[in-house]
Length: 214
Image (cartoon, rainbow, N blue to C red; front, side):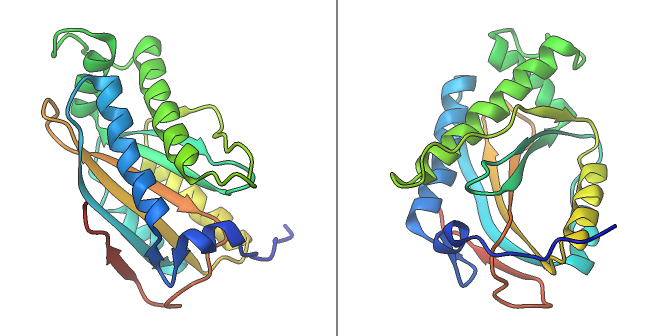
């Protein structure tokens, strides 16, 4: 199989400079919390946020930090701002979030059927769209994500992502890692944005830059 050489993306490199986020990226991360608040009717806050540079050979080990029984919503980013996104939460939190989205008493949802998965997919779609809307510059045009897909096993998806990165000769994977907390949920909602085309800041070493909450 032929491989595609890694290419940089000027837009991402203007948003993350030397591994650190610019102000507009911080605003986009915060705006996801605002969107989640509106959709769940909860006061959702940003509990933790950072940018991590992970050497490709350490990426699989890094994904093991994801707790078992995690549900994810996967979306591709816009062609003009390439990358992927994964909104993750524990299954228990997902059941609670569905109840909040559907206006039901908490504890009503017992399983994630087609209606429940559709609600979670819409949550991921609207949250990521709000993220991209903040980042979109006038000269860029609209940034639209792909339709959402609910992922039962995010870890398996990430292994496939690592294989594709290897084929593309990408040595470092960047992760915009944000955690959001809603009062009604038992654990945080985690958003991973995996941009494509960012120049490595510290090649070969795992580095993390914590983003201070405003």
